[in-house]
Length: 220
Image (tube, rainbow, N blue to C red; front, side, top):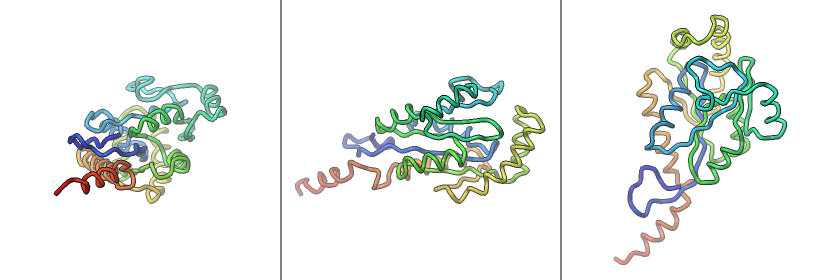
């Protein structure tokens, strides 16, 4: 893949990588994930997870998630067709392996919206080309407000999500980057900064050596 922000003819080739966003429910990871994936400037492929949970009224099957039953999920897991999977709030989520392998094989970047359990699994399997970002809410009171304003969960489910949020937040130090999502536009700009920095990393830019050699071979 070539650098997305480089326009000259000799743009330097590089390896693709996986960008993972995690956060407690309501902190903004899904909104940020879909915003940056929808921006053609970044050329990111969006990983679509499978899940056994019930579809929310605002969600579209195949766009937000692939909604399947428990039997189908167990079949995918049993055949080792999931790159990662986790149980969250009593529901199962997973990432199909083949679409990810196809994107990385083509040298493109892919963005994931998964929890810390899935992040650990992906990192263990793909190591150096995994970049992780944890999204924090500015406060737990604001997190509660966002969940209630979303109006897609019952009061009992909201309480369960808030209790689980404390456990998820404790995993913040396992991530490469941390963004406090107090303002969505600011958080989006921070995420763009991470993308730029990771795409410019020397170790990931496979074409850098030949580019520099070409520079040095130019006549005075």
